[in-house]
Length: 152
Image (tube, rainbow, N blue to C red):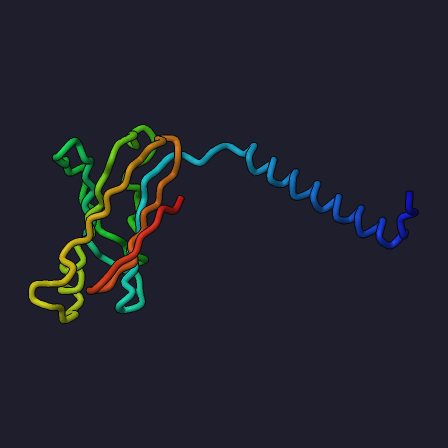
């Protein structure tokens, strides 16, 4: 057995303490109560480089080959929908569609578009597979393209 250099022993001990602290912090984070389930969204106008204030968004529940309108909302000045689209017991395992009215938004902004508009509406179909989780579906868009992802 080789003797351990005292300086190396101090470095190893510090690493062990740091790992223990990280593990304790992670365990503490898991022990905190879960945040309530929700479906939320926001919209960012990448063409103008700002939040999509006032964009209209429709939320549908998909049922087989049909869809049922649940609500229509408008984004606030920060491009966010102030209240969650669905939350708590209203969030069910199902397929939903968020429809962002992009051409209408740009028309109100005075942005010239093709005729007909390249993007009229942007429909995003998402599945809620666990009604105990949090789902955030943002839209980044321009008159010619868009991007989304699942946040929380």
